[in-house]
Image (cartoon, rainbow, N blue to C red):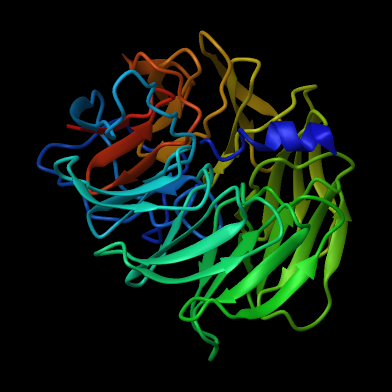
Length: 395
């Protein structure tokens, strides 16, 4: 149990829609192309946690702005380990000092600040006109996205390390899903904070739940836990609940595509599992204890690890296609955009890696370790550093 507590802290230090992406598109923007405007309202960008944006971020990018939260004289600025989310031109991210910030995506200027009860190390989620997040004191908050005013809060019995997923429709109220160290995954009414249902697991829940949509319209949730199981639950809380044996701590968030969930777990394996049957499609033993969450496109799975490697696997066979080796370990999760993967490193560098062959196209020395995962929206890439600063890059 203690091991999962330790590795889980760095999981989300790292979190929509749009047209289907090609498997390995070309580099950069074509002549005369404009960047479409998409949001990044959830950790990993969408409800399936794929780590993909339809936007094409060109290489190179330039540092457009930086947001440095105020700090008392003589004190060190607390790190920002939570991954940012972006919606309606606003960046939302929390800090280890308990401050939760809304930042203007275009200028990097502060819009508002909210003080939580405890440190914020997990990514938020935006649904409609509200932003939701949890803190390590076990509270889940709903704030007005425009003004930061508290709409409600809900208290769990353990710390919140994982992000929040959302769901609308199906004739039910808007819902949010969040796990806690109290062993429960909660489904809350997004409007009121009322518990619609909750599910008890065998240990801490430190991952962001991932949505799985079947061809018949059924919506399930899947998430790994410190109990060594992959849980599959109906999103409405009704019907059979299943457990798939993983055999090791799952201290990050799985990515889902076409009914397959991709898990890189603490037992040193990367695994593809068909959700409907629970059968393993393929498994690759690596010996790496993963904390970063994988990203997936039509043809490949991308996994970053503390062994300095960002690896592309064939999504069907599980065979390694290429590996990029950074200068130090990788705790941040990769982001897919156009012909590149954007990857933060513990060496303080932000990398653009070519999707076709894994070679480095560009890098920028941030000067601070990067544990949080990057987010992208409206032509801007946002990344947070262990120096407590939020950075915005654009063409």
